[in-house]
Length: 78
Length: 403
Image 1 (spheres, rainbow over the protein chains, first blue to last red):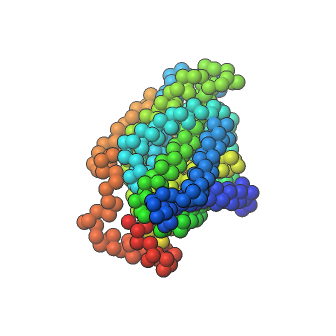
Image 2: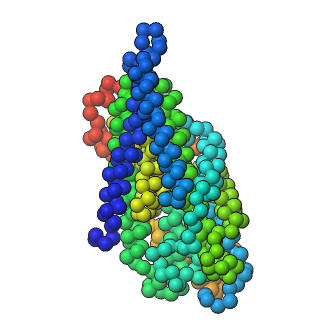
Image 3: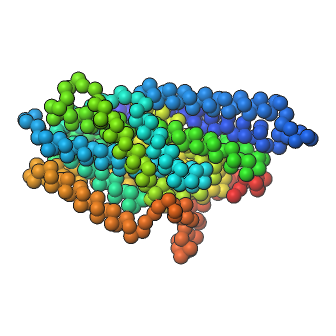
């Protein structure tokens, strides 16, 4: 059977798929939580700096991944 | 054929290839946009317009077009224009049949099936590389949804865990953008990948017909017409398929939609990067299923999924039968007759679809018809089991996260 399944490629797809494909949505979710979750507003209704910084960091990772994906598509890696 | 190429046959092959490209866009809109339409992140018309535009951009983005068809699956030496024509018609007819039946199925597998059938008719079993067919088509059709289910269910679970105490309307508002972004990537990748397949077929036909030299790159008119055909198909929107994928399998909310589309985009890009090509349709379907499994208490309609898996296994023999028949028709009666058959079949299938039209207006209607109460209850009892097994008490703490 090993001739019929390219285990090497499949394994890489599964592992990297889990890291990137599940990781990026998680970054996004953490970003959302820092902006709108409990404790995201102080007594004056303003967002604490740390929360905003976390959100910006998370969304930056996601945006970076999208740009990288477009580059990969454009290079014909697809 | 090897002998003097017939210009009429060449023109018919090019037209048929563009028609296949159209059905490809039309059939696969759902892969990118079904979840965004179902969660109302985008209005149906907006979604297909965005997807069509990105498919078009994608078609121009990368031009590493290879003049091949079913490479490694059939013997390249037996591919003639007649075989290509039979294969294309087989692929188109199967795409249309699965569209009427509202089943998302892989356009590339339909094409491969059609070509395999035509090759069998042309040169017997020796022309088909059977181990290639198993390794490149049949097994990936089974593995793709499994991989996507894994990635998407883990993603959904993590996302929901991270946002369970965020008010639902904030979740919807922000995840909407993430969902649109990830769905756009899927559209872009689809445009690049699948429009190039049609360009490759037309290039192959032009080389075989002697119109361009064997080392020629794709003529500009081919790029433009393929991009347009696919964008037009995408814009027409295969609403039936969109409905099944977005509403039929799982009731989705925006967080699941984001997780599912991110999983689809990632798995597709990784699989082509590592040269182990998985079908977009199979990956997208698996991702939607996974987003249902990842959310506790979400209902997954396994009966609908089962119908799809069956269709995927039938794709190659079914498209192959049509491909073989069309090859025979072409050799005995000429390419005109094949074209006439294609038009007749397409017209018939279109008329069939009008019996129960699905369009942008009713694409999001509730999946279970009220009249169908008994079967709905039966289905929910059967289908609830997997998600109930996964359910933990945590669910009760997140009333805001539930719709």
